[in-house]
Length: 305
Image 1 (cartoon, rainbow, N blue to C red):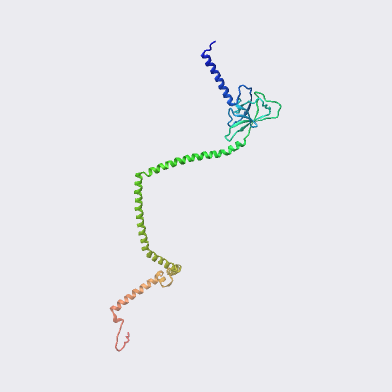
Image 2 (image 1 turned 30 degrees about the vertical axis):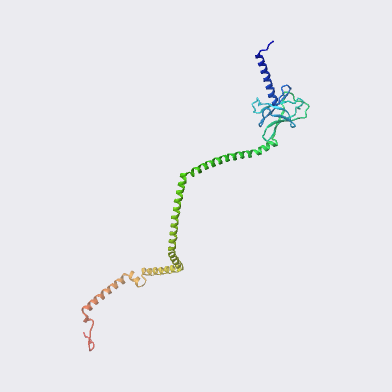
């Protein structure tokens, strides 16, 4: 019987697919020709545990994680399916599946702690789970802040490099031919300004030297004023004002001649009358001097009535 080419191609394809499936599972640690035991465990958090993660007993791999999925009760817990490939291993029912770290990169695996029960787990049973931080987890947590700081440092370095690059570009633009000419002109202008300022400073020094004698005279005058006993002078002036005030008070009170003249009207009127009479007498004496003055060589002769 002659086999057609189509049958041959189909057969080869089936064998190739079978070999591919077997090789894929073999690389994952699953032997399709052996009867493996499957058990389940539950975790609220798996921290990076994934399919094909190893299952270890005392450092020796006895299986692998075949699947991870959420529990159907909507609790958020994760069910982990473990395939035990070591057919000679007997797992007591009180054994514990520990979630462990395998390296510093926080790769996770399942470490089985075998119990002492005489009852053995069978295919489809659930094993108790336990999750605790290992030394590697503690180290990773301690290294995490350093990692974050390193990342921030790298970001800062990137920013610094960008700023430095921008600064260099600005410097290149600054020192082009046009800017160099402008800078040269600015330096010349600055030099001229400094020379003018130096001239101004020299003139100011000369002016200060001229003012020194005048300032010295004012200083001598101030020293002379300091030597005057201003307090005594003021006391004497106050005493004189007090005396003048007392005299004026007495005059207002009618004390003394000036006070009588200022306050006594009769005295003033009498004095005015006397003055008037004296004026009349002087006028009459000028008009009739013989009535008041007599000259005789032989003496005066008494006049009889």
